[in-house]
Image (cartoon, rainbow, N blue to C red; front, side):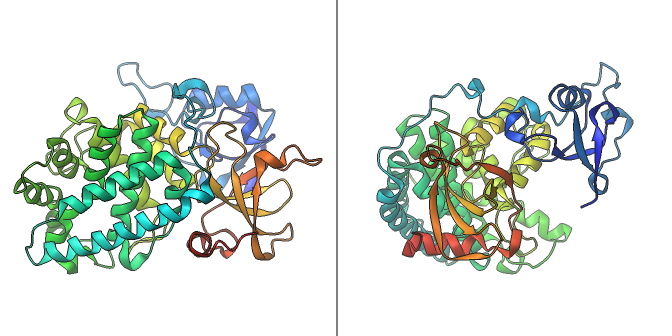
Length: 421
């Protein structure tokens, strides 16, 4: 990284701000690191900072129509990170408190998650040989997922880190279900609506089982013919569900429309704007987020922070902006699975989201201040620890592979063996 210190008075559009002269959490910026794409970012930086650090290698060359002097007849979508303050009251939702502790719910959540894994593998196999889809078990699993998230949202959310590259579609289906239910609950959907949303999310990719395996598992970009065939999977899934009685129309809509985009650039029907229902839009956001934070045949995962940063820059064309902002608030300032550096110099993995004290999650300490791994990862509750003589705070969000850490390894060990002390 090529950084240089720049006084805020000398900042220009297109510069990439990598560090501030103060902790990020003392400002209203959501993302740690962003390009200056409009006058609003300049004004906010000049208001809250004296100087910043700029990374020359990550600067962007702006097209004339993207700068703040664009004609008023052509409104510009700016990357206004300071407008999304997830610790503010802008979310309007009251903090949702968990019924039981994380440690109490984790064994039950793990059982439900593993049952869902086995179920998805089973129905995918049955679909490939033209057998019907056993929806009763899917409904039951969705109900258990809703119940577990209601008991403690962090337990099931932690399990979404158990991703395997060679079983991407299976884990992706389960994770989209979990994250969709979590998001729907954050938005205030009823229990009945959450069950419909969860079932649609669990089945959202069943049409892929009608796509040739060579295309589905191709290690590289699809050619135009293959891409066209892949883009049929939402309609193929919808047709499968159409043969079953009693399938709510909202579930079919989720399966059919989870790749549609608000500007009409999605598929398979090119729907746009108000043509897109709330539940398909929820699943579309979650679908992209989980895909970006997973290892796949043709790309490596990125961190939750990086994924949300990129998705926010696409909000105007891909998603409803207010809905994406709500999703960012739902995941929290430090999404579960984020690697962070503490004021003590230690490196930790975020274990739970704290809905009341947003800056004080529970974390799993992985590396000591010298960046050497602990023999056994240590649990640290930053909320409880703040009452000690030397409170510890999160100072930095790290990339997903920082210091060679394999997040999935620690997630699996903690979920199954609880090795932390």
